[in-house]
Length: 207
Image: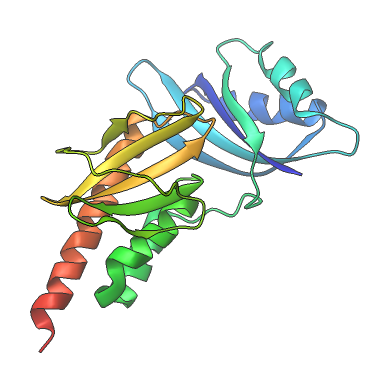
């Protein structure tokens, strides 16, 4: 079973090597690593996609990493996508390949890009306009100006949202975690803005 591990570690040479060695000793096999955020305090947050050796448990990885100086496990959980990274630029390429349906493609791709469980486009007047299969059925529009985390009725679900226009927002959700970081909110706002610009340009050129 593949797992997603989000870990905070010192942003210095050798940190990733120590991390990889410790994960291997605990029975984990790293499939991919992605830098999520670099912070001004000299730390970084990385997402590590790993498979566990037969008989090994993810708890052993957590225990081992907690023994490393400056390393903190922020989240570990099963990840059905198996560590397939879908980078922001690839998402933009998909949007530009079909500009007339850019907003729909954005919603479909956001869960993969951000390793979330679902995404939805919510209208102030019409409610949910487009959503992926796991999205809740009762999402409500909220007045927001920039990408930010928003409250959820279920404390086990984490939501964030970005504004598309005056009457529509994009909502992204994770069950349980990890928490949405500031860098992820910035990326969500950027991608949402690009999708809206691509969609507007397509409408403007349509006869």
